[in-house]
Image (cartoon, one colour):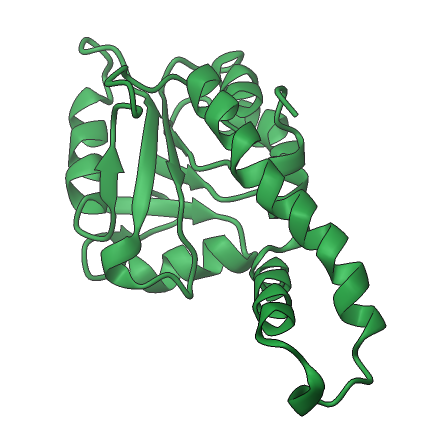
Length: 200
């Protein structure tokens, strides 16, 4: 299957490395993965309204609302992994699927089948309810947003101790420092999207 990946940031670049065994990367493809910050969704959805859009944004409800203003042909899936995530720990939450009569329904299924080879696709929440963009964002407000906020806050303490030799650091501080390093995996666009969560 051919896919066009829009986005040259950390996650878009990672997808361009990760997907070629299962997808052909082609800028003329009918299926377009939007691996961009939420601030770019409105214009890109309008620009590609005649294609099948794959929304991989870290916040799903606002990005889906923007995309759906321009086309019904949008699949919502949030990959909960990055470049450093071990292959056996990759999960992605499926939040929105096309109507069965969509002209892109077969393309969507082909995409999901291929993506399932790089990530487990989670369709229901811990209560057995099908995910929606809204339920996804409610969950991510408790987890994703909390992790970013905590790491930003802890970064102040880590930077304050950057002159302390490693042998004088307690293990608890080292663990905190390692947690703060997770921010390094998140480009500004990803943090922007996470912080656009309507339930934060």
